[in-house]
Length: 148
Image (cartoon, rainbow, N blue to C red; front, side, top):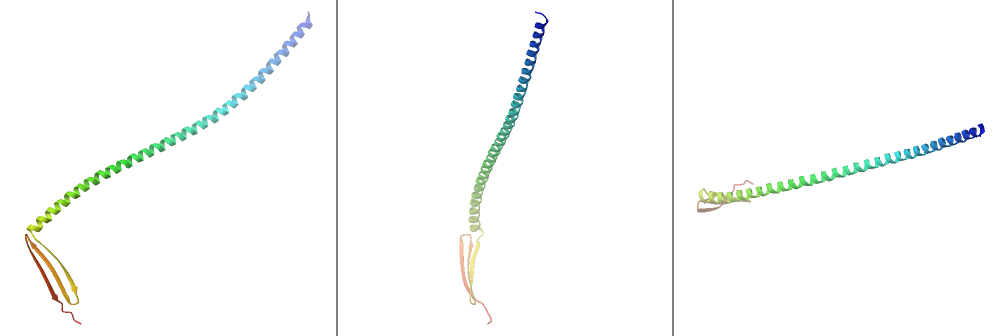
């Protein structure tokens, strides 16, 4: 076992080392390719997730806007109903006051009502004068001087 054996061992060990290096290089190349592929897939997935989050945010914002609009609409309807109710109550009160005032005015001060009608050369006047509890009706027909 001389120098030939050590040279053969050295050649064998050198071949084993070269093969190991080559296998390592192939393995690292395969792992690098797998890592790059995984990185590409992760980037794509992140992009999809960001788009989905954006869509969810948009939907949530639209829902919030719709709810806010509905709340504002409901509040405005309630305010309108409340003000309309108050207005109707005031209107009824005004009508009651007007009825009593007119009755009082009619019975204390009196009033004059009437109408007229013109036919050919005649003026028909009908007047009703009311003073307190007394009433007087006047009907008169006046001939108008019309030149022909």
